[in-house]
Length: 245
Picture 1 (tube, one colour):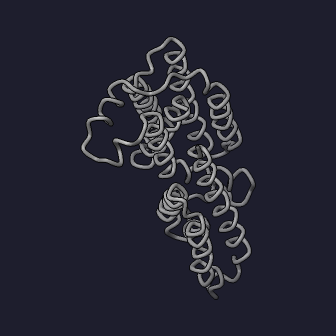
Picture 2: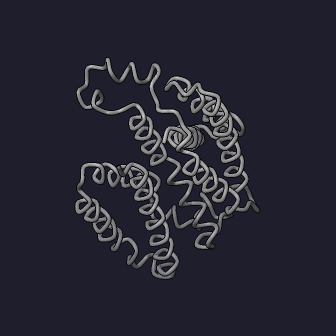
């Protein structure tokens, strides 16, 4: 699973860097560089691993470029979604050829004075890092892409007064927090608690969706809320499935 972990780290860093400072080309290169550097730090130095790291770097750059084009006026969302899905599928299919993580990362985990980390194998630590990184910003990117691809929201309205996201404020922050909490509760074996979190979100959003001020837009807002929430939850659950042992 080391190749999958490195890919997730690269994608997660790219999207996080874009959310902080959206500089074209630079954010993708930063994500690709971090992914390759972390892979080498984890001891992925066999010929097959080096080829995989090169392909991961290319996939990260392609993902970043396609996302940038998708969010531009007249952009298309499906290429970015298909590119990421294909890269993840290929990583899963080829995961059996990946070398186990070790190297300096393994040495550090063995020497760190935190019992919880000392018990975590390097492979799993790398995958945990990748999974939690993509919950922060990549999940929001996926949600936006799906909303636009399904015509649930017009990409041209992004960050304008007509954007439902501006009316259901807080989603950019609540989404990462919610996904991280779901993954964390799932890892702790508390799936029931995770389902309570999901139900609570719907109850808390209900008055906002039914406010008199939004009555003329209530159907569009409800669709936006439901599609966006389900995509976000499925993204968190799919990430959790990668961590299942």
